[in-house]
Amino acid sequence: MQPLVSIITPMYNNANVIIETITSVINQTYSNWELLLIDDASSDETIAILKLFKESDSRIKLFQHNQNKGAAEARNLGTKMATGDYIAFLDADDLWKENKLELQVSQLINNITDVSFGTYEWIDSKSKPLNKRVEALKQLTYNKLLKANYVGNLTGIYNCKKLGKIYTKDLKKRQDWLLWLEALKRSDKPAISIQETIAYYRITEGSLSSNKTNLIKHNFNVYYKGLGYSYIKSSLYLVQFLFEHLLIKKRLIKSIV
Image 1 (tube, helix red, strand yellow):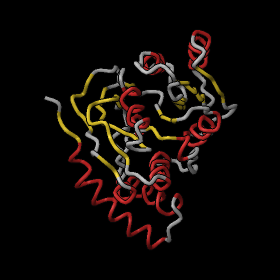
Image 2 (cartoon, one colour; image 1 turned 90 degrees about the vertical axis):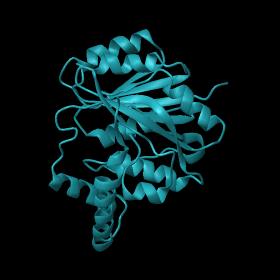
Image 3 (tube, rainbow, N blue to C red; image 1 turned 180 degrees about the horizontal axis):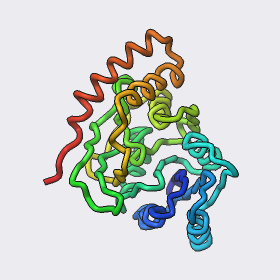
């Protein structure tokens, strides 16, 4: 029997895009999945839309927070309720290409890796291509990931049956980076990527415009609060991060001609 993939989708007031996101899961060529929709106390029409999908497809499950708790808590609830062999993540405003799961499950079944990720493209608020692609490294070690987050969360999937469920700390930002660090820490293999485009990341106002203060603060907290490094060690790693993020990682963003 094919392995079950648990897909975790947290959301908050995403009524304008959630139909397209869920549809991109339903259209997957790999069909043995469960979609865990975690609503973080939305106040718009999100819940009404989610209930319609839940009623029409038994693979779709809905969980609700009574009050807004943030992305980390929503993802952790999804992880707790997941029953699959593999766990993947898809934020409420992003999309998957139809063969995304098929390609990655093939990697995991064949024991090529315990953690798979891939290349993704940018789209705008109306799902139109922005002609930019973020290319995935062919493989990724823990030490390389420690320098900067090279895993697009919308492309990531890990072998839960082998590595166990991974919960993340409740940081305001960058919880996904901590999750993939923990996954590679538990694995005896590097992460292996799918080089072709497997997902579409929606660029909205603020997606790429984080100011320098926030860039420093949130990434410092990954080392200091997330990994428990000392203040001095966290500062040294932050310097390394800024070099990697600003001068090396940005080379992976390519124009699509």
